[in-house]
Amino acid sequence: MKPNGLSQTINRPWFAILAPALLGFGLAALCVRASEFYGWSLFLGLPVLVSFLSGFCTAYQRDVPFRRVYWISVASLIALGALILILALDGLICLLMALPLALLISLVGASLGRVLGRACKRGARAVAPLLAALLFPGLVAFDRGTQSPEPLREVRSSVVVDAPVETVWRAVIAFPKIQEPPTGIFRLGIAYPIEARIEGTGVGAIRYCVFSTGSFVEPITHWEEPTYLAFDVRESPEPMRELSFYEHIEAPHLHGHMVSHRGQFRLVERAGGVFLEGTTWYTHTLAPQWYWGPVSDFIIHQIHGRVLNHIKRTSEAAREGVRFEG
Image 1 (cartoon, rainbow, N blue to C red):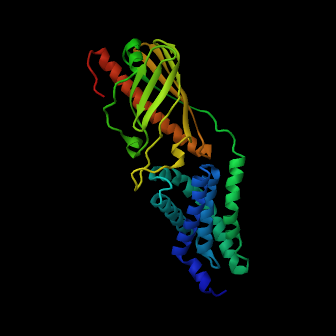
Image 2 (tube, rainbow, N blue to C red; image 1 turned 90 degrees about the horizontal axis):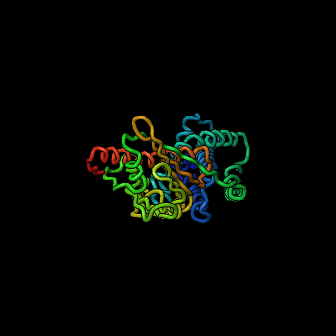
């Protein structure tokens, strides 16, 4: 079948990259702005759809190697990310965190698009791309309507402190300002702890854990000095500051989509020091949980590490009678 003008346009890389990306941006805005929903339809369904449409356009009425189809689909996903960033739908860090999943899922979309695009060479009608795009809002509605309650996730981290348990306890309930500059993921905008202070003692006291984006307000629920401190989280700040072209963007996932519910510290005296363990219980609404769960657990572990290591340094310095500066 000799290609006509329409098929030649559809086959062009710029069209196979930009057209799916523009449609994908509109559908992403529907999820994020209209419904403030971050389900699997957004993180799985949308990359499949965009890569499918890109693959279909690339292979429309012709035989194209899968490698070419796939990389043009990836370029389309990157173009979608650029639109999201430029038009302030989300920030760079969240896009980078979602990228590995999108690259994996696009293998499926690009494969399906290539198969159906080639099939049009044998006279099949090109209705599948249009149908897939029209069904996406229904997929989002189905995803939202069948969403199960998010699981309560638990993250534990620990450190051994070479200091008396009473000294460690004092640093746990209220530690001085961390002077060490943020490193690793904290340099990318993830909220990081700065200091902790407490008002009152015992059950009912209020602990404030100050982060780079604001303060966690933590009413004390258990106080067993000097071995056990537990608290609820009544208020929490934004989990991150998005990297963007703009000074501040209001991405919906920054509000109420990752919530810390409670936490605790346990101190156990052992030969040679104190075993200090910190635990956080939290939920997040991003799906699929099997992907985003390990990502958020890793972030919580990094936060724990910054706090626990600071408590360790502060306590060990106090044991030596030295004032520790951050």
